[in-house]
Each structure stands twice: as C-alpha cells, then as structure tokens.
Length: 186
Image (tube, rainbow, N blue to C red):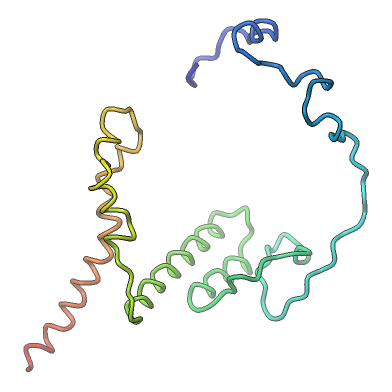
C-alpha cells in the first residue's frame, strides 16, 4: 500500500499478515532464527573508553563536545579557503544551527571549485563530457529509461545540463572577455 495522508482504519493482526504475506513473522520465534545461538540480548556494560588517538595541529570538533572523539579520520586535513570556512563553522556555530551546516556545504563547494581550477593548471584537465556520464546517456538509452516509467526525477531533468555545463560555459565566457582586450592590443 502506498503512503497516503489517510491512515488505514486498523492495523492487521499477526495472523492476517502471516496468511497474506509468505514468510511473514518467520523470525519471531527465537528457536528458528539463524542468528539465535550467537545473539546476545544482555550486553555487558563497560566503562572503558578506547585510547585517545594522537594528533598534531588543528582538528575540527563541535563546540558541544568537551574533547575530540577517541578515534577520528585524518585522510583529508583542512586546507585553503575551504578549510578556513569549515574551521569557522566548527569554531563558532553549534551543530544545531543551520549556519553551521550551510558553512560546511559552502566549504565543500569552494573545495570543488578549487579542484576544478587546479585541474586546468595540470597537464590532464577534467573532461566534463566523459566524467558526467553524458555519453552514456546517449549510448545506453538514457531517455528510454526515463520516459513512461513514472520516475519522479523527470521533474528536475531540465536543469541538469545547466548545472553540469553552466560553470564551464561561464568560465569560458569570463576567459573570453578577459583575453579579448589583450588580443585587440596585438
């Protein structure tokens, strides 16, 4: 039954569910559960904490917590402008405030834009045509897989090319306008 605003009149009983749904309630009896011999319902309480992981320099920590968690990731340390934005979010704003999360999203977007700019400086820049899956959409029946199947994502399909190609087109226009006066002087 799909989710609707109308609540069903009553919930079906276990016997009704068992009669209409094959296998319903198969794990209710502990004797027939596959995991029963290994299942522990009484977990002993312990007061031990894992050993605190050593760290050097700044580590992001929510202002709600007195100290860092005992174990944390060190794969991607904060760096550049995006790191400054993320530090601001952690140092000043509670996790319960929308501004904390908006700053973290902004930091991600700044990092993504900087990564794109760094790719242009490298010998192998990003290729938006192959990396966004546009060719797969054309070769593998992308339109056929969407139309006539009741998919909800069709409502925003029109904006996808703008979001994907927009930054590249905007960058090309800015580059053309900046270099145009230089070309006229020659």
